Length: 425
Ligand SMILES: Cc1cc2nc3c(=O)[nH]c(=O)nc-3n(C[C@H](O)[C@H](O)[C@H](O)COP(=O)(O)OP(=O)(O)OC[C@H]3O[C@@H](n4cnc5c(N)ncnc54)[C@H](O)[C@@H]3O)c2cc1C
Image (cartoon, rainbow, N blue to C red; front, side, top):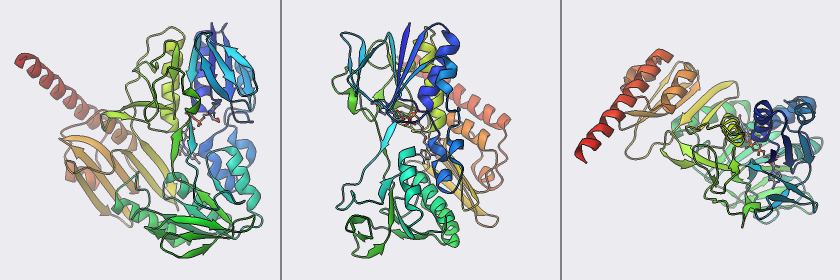
C-alpha cells in the first residue's frame, strides 16, 4: 500500500506514526512545503523569548527516517490528478498514492494594507516567520502587534520579555474576542498592562510607513505609532488552495465524515485544514488546535490502513498563561442571545464563567486560577446537564465523577427525547 501525506505538521507526523504502527511494510511519503524537519508552532513564541532553537523539533530532527518514511522537504503539492492517483509537486515531480491524507494545516491571513510588504512587517505562523522576528530583535526597539487573539498575545508577551516596547492594536472592543467574554478578557488585559504592554482597542492599522524598513503604523483613528517591527495576527485560513479541481469538497475547511474521509474515495483530511463537527456548537467548524489535529490524524490514519475508526468531533480549547496568569477556556465562550452565562470574580484577580444552552453546559472560561479543567473540558465535550450553576461557578466542586453523571443524564435525556420523537412518528 502507498500512503501519501500532504503536510509535515503534527497531523502529518501523527498519521505517519499510526500508519507505520498498523502497516509496517507499507510505503509512506510525507510531502512538506516547509524546508525544515517537523517542529512545534506552539513553541514559536518561546523561541522568540529565548528558548534554544533545537527544542522546537519536538519529535527530533530525524523522525521520518526513524519511521522509515520518505520526507520530501521544502516541496509543495500543487494539485491532485485522480485519473492517475498522483499528487503533483511544485518541483515538477509527482508521487503515486493508494491512500492520501490532506494535512496541510492553515496559513496566517496576510495584511493587505499599504506598506505591509515593508521589511520588519511579518506574521507569526511558521519557523521562517519566527526567524524573521529573531533577526529584527537586535535593532528593533518598538514593536506593534496587530490583533488580540491568543497567538498575537503570546507574541506580544514574548517580545516584551526580550525588552521591547510593545503596543497591541485590536480592532474589536476587547482582546481575545474569539476566546472569552469581555469580562474575562479584561482580567487578562489588565495583567499584561501591569507588565508594561500597551493596548489600543477599537482601532486598526490602515497602513505602514517606512522607506525599506517599517518605521511607523498609521491607525484608522488617525494616530501614528512608531514601530520597527510589526507582527500581524489576523487569524488563519485552511491551506487548501491546491485542492481546486481536486474533487474534494471544501467549505470553511475540507469537508470530512466521522471517519475523517473526504468526499473523494481514498482521500482523508485531518488537522487545521479539516472542518469537523463542533460538539458544543453542534455545527461544522474548523477547531484549529494541536490536540484536535493529532486525534483527527490518528482516526484518519487508522481508516486509511483499513480500520473503521470514528471521530466524535471537536471543541475549541485554549489553555495557557499570560503574565503569569493561568487561562483556560473551552467550548462556547461568547454566548448567543438564547444562552445563559454565569460568571463571578473571586480571590485576587480571578474570574470564572460558564455558558449554558437549554440546560447543557457548552462553555467554560477560567482566568487566574484554573481548577478541575479536565472535568470541565469533559463536561462541555459531552453536553453535561443538571449542573448546579451558581455553586459551580463559585467553588467549582465538579469532579470527574460529577461530570460523568451529568453527561450520563444528558445522554438519557437525549435518549428519551429520541424515543418520544419515535412514538410521535
Ligand atoms: C504561534 C502559535 C502558537 C500556537 N499555540 C497553540 C497552543 O498553545 N495550543 C494549541 O492547541 N494550538 C496552538 N497553535 C495551533 C497549532 O500549532 C495547530 O493547531 C497545529 O499546528 C495544526 O497542525 P496541522 O498538522 O493540522 O497543521 P500545520 O501545523 O499548519 O502543518 C501543516 C503543514 O503542511 C504544510 N503545507 C501546507 N500546504 C502544503 C502543500 N500544498 N504541500 C505540502 N505541504 C503543505 C505547511 O507548510 C505545514 O508545514 C499555535 C499556532 C501558532 C502559530
